[in-house]
Length: 210
Ligand code: C5P
Image 1 (tube, rainbow, N blue to C red):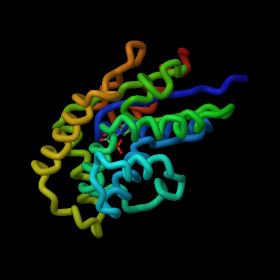
Image 2 (cartoon, protein in one colour):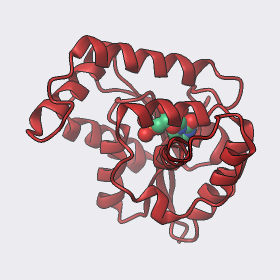
Image 3 (cartoon, rainbow, N blue to C red):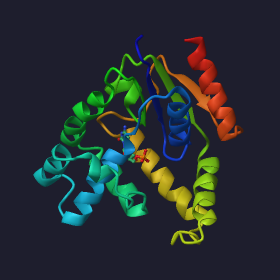
Image 4 (cartoon, rainbow, N blue to C red):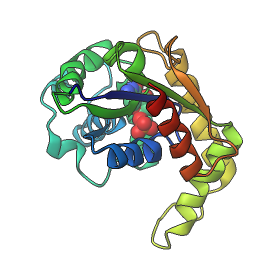
């Protein structure tokens, strides 16, 4: 039988990663967090000290491999910003396109990002677009930082987190290429007043109706 392709998009910190991971587990599908690809390119750009519009960055994207996006230093505020900057470069997105499509073979896939339902898999079986208010997203991120006693960001102010999130939202939604927006046939899930389990239940209901 044909395996499902499930596309999950939304802004930073809406909980789409949490949902995508839980769905993949529940449905025994492979999972790819596509933000990690852009983060890995951003990380390598910072390490190499090259400019965001440079040929070197395109080359980094073309050469990217699984070990690059499996490293554990991809979730820092510097990398958040670098990822969003490289993601606005058309040639970087082009270099990462086939990589993402090839990930969904006969096995199906759950993939989360910004343009999965609009660009990567316009004919995905299921498209979910996850939303949450800026306030709730900043609070969730802040809680993530504070619950880990070793996190150097533990004392980071919630106002600063909110400012960085909204800066990245603005950049991701207003860029010329693959701006964040729901596909016309996407189902919207508003997670503001829902627990992670409730979000999963809603998504499963949508999938079972399919
Ligand atoms: O999802 P995450 O916050 O890890 O993504 C990091 C950055 O990568 C985003 O701010 C966005 O600019 C970019 N991105 C993208 N398209 C995707 C996934 C992520 O442009 N499919």
